Image (tube, rainbow, N blue to C red; front, top):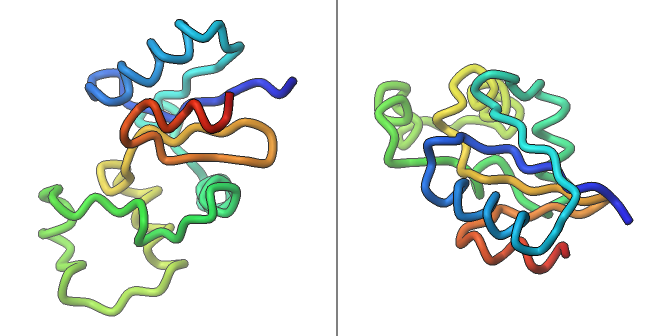
Length: 116
């Protein structure tokens, strides 16, 4: 049985719900605060590939940094987006949960049940 890794921000309500769901299900998991332990571009790309998601699928469009960077008005490649998400973690939807060769964006938190 593969261990679960949850990439999260501890102050995020959905992340806290997801962690509690993992605990309630007795899952063996590691919680990674990606603000303290940032993704590399390769890591983020790999997680998104496991989830079948593109960078745009997990882009937080309501964040100030999204507006400041003018991302709504620019044509930005997936590679550029990945680099920006690594540089500005507020751009990443959360939590991202990985188990083996699968991953989900756990919004809502009970989406994790697909992996358990």
